[in-house]
Amino acid sequence: MEILKPLPPFDLDSAIEKVQLAEDAWNSRDPERVASAYTLDTEWRNRSVFINGRENVIKFLADKWQRELRYKLKKELWAFTGNRIAVRFEYEYHDSDMRWFRAYGNENWEFNENGLMQRRFASINDLEIKEEDRRLH
Image 1 (cartoon, rainbow, N blue to C red):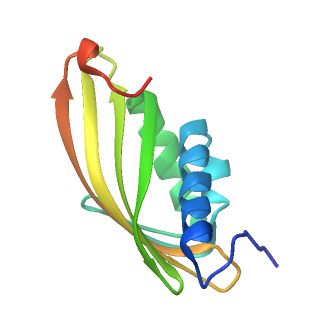
Image 2: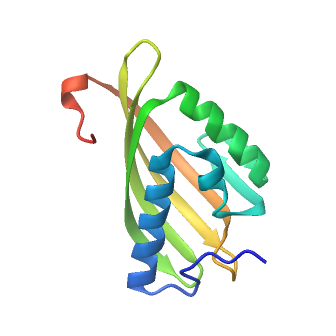
Image 3: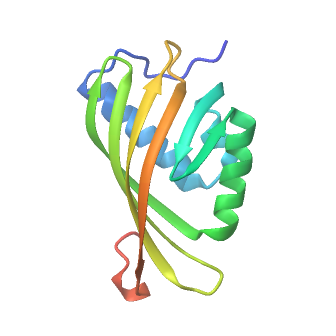
């Protein structure tokens, strides 16, 4: 049985830790590492894409990081209660034409009793930026 600490119910310190662990995993740009934090039957909404299951998350992330190059993310705890955490985030990347973007968004997370994320709902907007306007390096 997979267990990923910290476990719910979350307090301020454990919620902050969970957010930092997620940020670190996503910044690795390793789809399998990221997906290991989710249940096998995880449910996602990422923008207008609906994804079900860890294997589909791995494929989605591998495809994402083929398009979103030099990806760098910062997450911030917004709220938490029980087994749920809400975060705000921004990330920057460039495409194959060297156009830079900053994406802004919010995520709502729900965890099972073993600390694995069973639901992730993300709303994200992109803004094209100049390379010299990057904030995340």
